[in-house]
Amino acid sequence: MHKFSRCRILAVLLLIVIILGGCGKKEDYVAKVNGDIITRAELNKRTEVKLSQYELQGFSFSDEQGEELKKLVEQEALYELIQEQIFKQEIEKQGIKMDKDKAEEQIASMEEVYGKETFIELLKAQKISRKDLVNQVAFQMAVEELYQKVTADIEVTEKEANDYFNENKDDLIQVKVSHILASAQKDSATEEERKQAKEKARGWIERLSAGEDFTELAKKESDEPGAENSGGSLGGYFSKSTSNFVPEFTEAAFKIKEGTFSQSPVETDFGYHVIKVEDRKDTFAELKDSLIDTLTINKKNEKFNAFFADLMKNAEIENKLAEEAEQKKETQNE
Image (cartoon, rainbow, N blue to C red; front, side, top):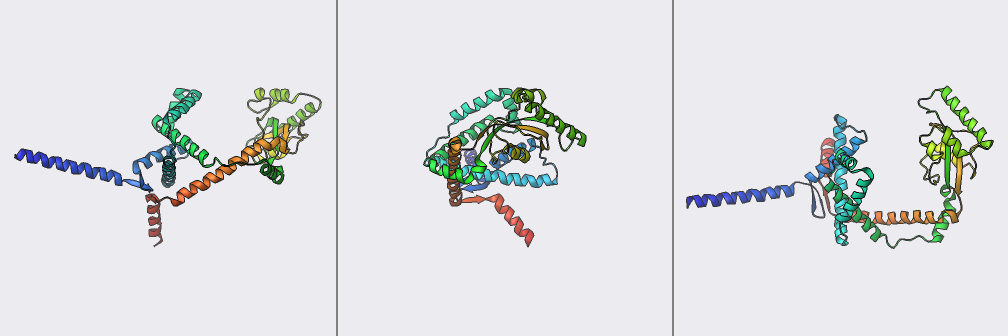
């Protein structure tokens, strides 16, 4: 009898420990979003991933300043998790499925592009497991479905696009260019080397004026890596606002007539260029389709951003890190 009673007491005590242990875990949270918790473990995991990504970009967190940066990354990670929780709640509310099978298909395609071993190494470097990646891709696909659902009624008429074109024509004109580069990096080349590069570019202009083919000359003479295959082509069309090139290059490109090349070398930090405008789109008829697409995306983004801002505004959010930071600030100010 005594032995039986003792076993019952031990069982009850064990049950209490389990219950209290469970309660402790539930309370170990760093944020609440409409009642749903984000745990310290979830935050630590996301912070570790973000720190790895920053380290791959060359950031260091080993010194005193690094410790302060870690705190900022942690706050950034928590804000991301809060946003994701709000999205997940809305996705569930809208009846959208987190499709892990489709996510697996997308990841399989990525593996094929990178190669399986390289892909595994990329995940390791960023401290992301395959399971976590599947969940993240499934989440992103669900957010995309939500985006399409929320913005389904958005459209841009031809008149709207035409009006926008007339008001912003200078910024919308697009060009497609090729170039031949005489390399002379401004931060490392001597004055003499820069002078020689400029003379080389002048020589090319003379040869082109005499009838040499631009593409063939670029393949033989240009210092740009890959020019022997590309013939100096810089790919697709760009406008002044979408150009990825340095300002001097962009400005010069839009002053050159279609089918012609620069009559003097164009100087940039990279050296001296001879630029040819292969094609130019400057009428509404030529730009209509891409303009309607761009304006539609802009309007969709505007509506979706406003939609999400409302979700954030109306959510009940408890952010313990933000509260602790505020308390610390108040204490320092006393």
